[in-house]
Image (cartoon, rainbow, N blue to C red; front, side, top):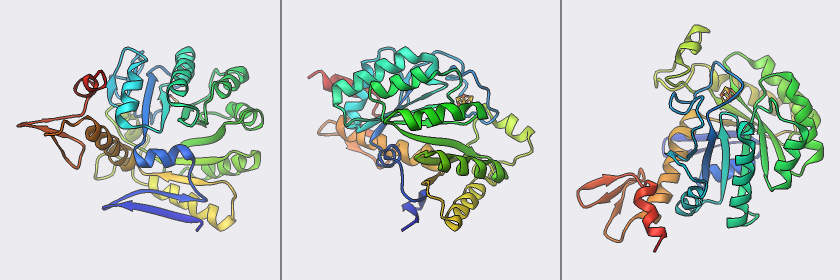
Length: 303
Ligand code: SF4
């Protein structure tokens, strides 16, 4: 089947055409951890949803937790029974050495099949820097196109690395022409997949989104028209028989479903024999309800 959507309970977890990247398939199972290596980024997209706390700081997080040691990532991956990790920011290339160390550590600890993908705008990155990510074992790289200068780097990555090269961009309402241009160009040069993200609203991007005349959906979390724009692109791709896979990722999937799946995995691993685990991945211990945070779970790893 060319085009599908999948539903969990009442939630649509995604729409796609011609399949999903391996990174997305693992995300859907909740079996990927998210490593946020820095809030710093040389770009200033008006739609950037990164929180105030994380933005422009050297903050370092694994999933929802702020961490100080790179080895803490191993604890989290073990508790989630992760099959892979994504590296994001800010701009991971701004903390290139740390990014390389993380890839090496996770591959050395969990083996080459531990799937790793990374998001980058590519700005400021060199071809050598991209090539070395491939050498240390990065499996998938996703470029966020913030301007046309990045295409050279994308083409280089497609031709000269073994990584799956994808493009991940927000579905800006009414931006059909520009998105379609990206689809055609990506298809022509052999990019492996395109992800269109529903535009998310956060405390940090709300004013700038409104200033541009977009409207916020009733749920207060997404921009009106973003899903519709992405769906039009998907329909056009099907109509034109485009060969590149396209995936539409709803904001609620990222927000709740993916995070909940990860919490559940962690809570089940972390719970004591007398504890209960709720559907949302909370641990009930006696009268107390607690999140399966690393300080609750990690002591178990030491025994
Ligand atoms: S490139 Fe990504 S991290 Fe940087 S400002 Fe834009 S959306 Fe935010």
